[in-house]
Length: 38
Image (cartoon, rainbow, N blue to C red; front, side, top):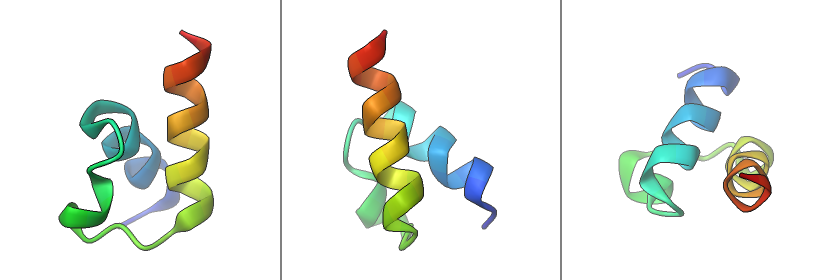
């Protein structure tokens, strides 16, 4: 899974991305930051 896909999953799963197998913590944290910015 690419970094961009990791960010998408992090954004739409609201922190549940780990259960989808995302291990790129930087992408997950960036996704969470995007959620908070909206």
